[in-house]
Length: 425
Image 1 (tube, helix red, strand yellow):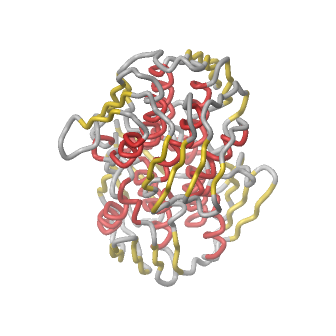
Image 2 (cartoon, one colour):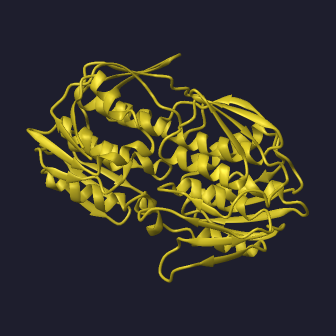
Image 3 (spheres, rainbow, N blue to C red):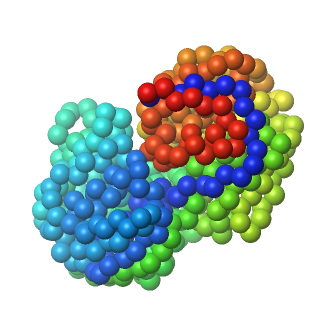
């Protein structure tokens, strides 16, 4: 699929879709609980669909009722379900479900699409190996497909925090180990807000654990249980980034509804960044209003919110002075190497953008329409759509179908607030 996108002005109201991060954690916990949970309005496409399939493979019963899902969990029957986990394009789902799949003694195999096969999973498998899991990479030189076979046992493991998902995976699973306490020694931790989302879920489940303020050591008692729950999934601040940046770039006034700023999602920091760059941000009880103002440059440390890099690199093109995006090297191990990809694709549109090891340097520039490629990366596709909305002429975005991974309604939602987008199938 391709999108043709032309210069646009965004204004009006836009409802933000459900959180991918919350959806996957909710599905995992509900699958491991004993009893029936109800998840209100989760993300059901893309990464959400992959997590639903993973829950079924784990042995959970899934019943979709309109926009909601009922899940009958497996309790402590960790050998229930099937062997083959098809994770599609979902790195988060693969990481989080891999540890859960290792709770039992049944061999489980994980695989996914070509993009997923290019991403790193071995650091998590190394940690699982220290806790008694037999892990095997099927192909030399890549981390997927892999197999795991437990049972996972208490003990001590080192955890590489270069992706926070490795730590979150173990935090969600180690409390369920039948015997023994687990100690996790964490190093090189990035993306702390995603760990905080995991801890938020564990707290709701009354899971006992201890950790230091820097999140370098976790002590987790075993033999704990998850309880069924009934919860609606919050709106996604990562998806809200695109509407917020779009409003800052093009609109006179754009209201984003459904956002809860008390939620632990780290990408709400984007609104503080917009404020620091000169955008008018008005937080309200039911969302936030964005008003376009003169955009100034600055230095943006995105270590905690790497998913914001594609959209903010587009915003930087419209700033009055240079923008430096720094301390976000882990953006290279997402669906694509987002640092390289955004440099390449925005350069095609005339951007003055240079790549650094840990980020980008972007100088003021005027963008022009071009044929660009989203590299099958949902956030790159949507960011390039924003770039096209401020570019002269027409832009064609290839692999646009990737947006469905987290935002299946992107085209309709943005058309409703003024985006000139044509879909070519």
